[in-house]
Length: 148
Image 1 (cartoon, one colour):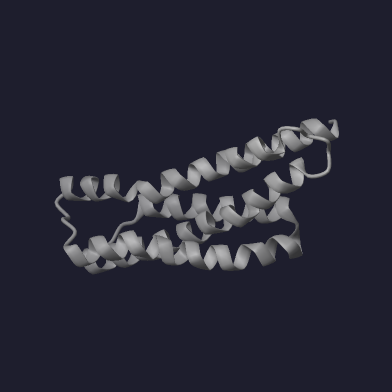
Image 2: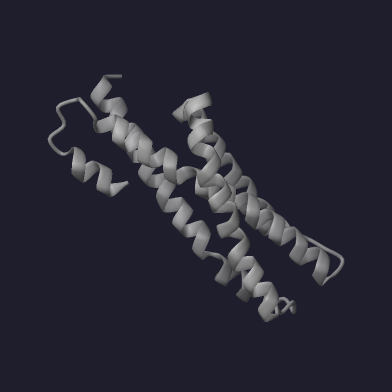
């Protein structure tokens, strides 16, 4: 595969990763509606925690995955962030508990893991986009970076 084609593939992967993170950050409202339809209504405290814990994980992911990307390489680190995002989303969808407290505790943990994966994508995707367009005579480098 040519260098230009590989750079375009990397940029597309980074853009799709950012799109999936935006979806995962916003889908908790749908999950809360489905919980309520099954007779488990979340109170205001649970709603606040479920909405906030993913952002706490995102901060942890942003602070750690820039360094992890330097150590492991951009590709493996991006794969790790996507694996964390997928694991957090799957566990969020498959939680089961014997009571409200157990159910929401599992959701908090799953949303935090999802947040770490989501947050890790941001520094890695930006770096991949910048590295894919830097120094290759790409006259559309700024446009490419802004798309990611």
